[in-house]
Length: 254
Image 1 (cartoon, helix red, strand yellow):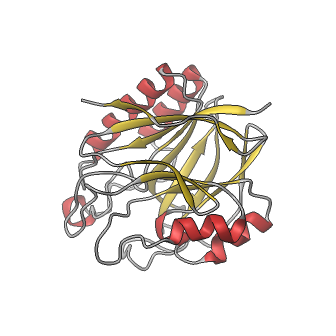
Image 2 (image 1 turned 60 degrees about the vertical axis):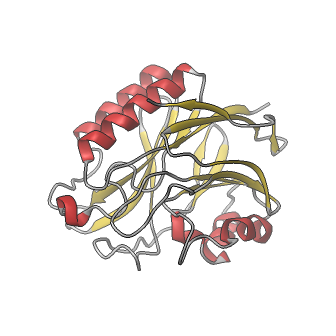
């Protein structure tokens, strides 16, 4: 049987405060691993915050894995955990992307998904490839925030063999906030979705009421929002496609 303990890191991020965010991510990953997590997911752009360019520009963005990502790969190896890390990256041609990196329990960077929809990210280029990544014999499809906006990307991932949808996001309520898109994607595809959102606020958007969710068949199975950073733990049976927890186990990071 393929049962995994999942941790979603619902983090209070600071736009442009890269070192502070990196330290928080590392702390949260280590604490989640201590609680028995096997898959650990961060929000979209956890390293930089969403609206970071006015605070720190883009010159600091490097090809991945950079020094910090390499250190996180060592944490993944020593803790035997799989990580989904939201971070900006530069490609060899100098183009910038909003990406999620997958690091396996051997500490290897086994895949990345670049955000396809870059309309609201004026600093980044649009990714061109959408492909599930195989982790622990599970094909995981990654939809970064607005890539869930229509069914096209979710259906494409399903048709390529995805068995679960992972949605690292920075998407709070309000004007242009989520309005049933995640729920609809689970209905369109017949696949469950883990939405790892965040808290806090950036220049023009707030996330204090943003929810991290476990969704199946359009229904919220688990939901959480908070004003503090929190580790959200739950157990999932990938073989039966079944939630084994009745609620999130919540560990706040002070």
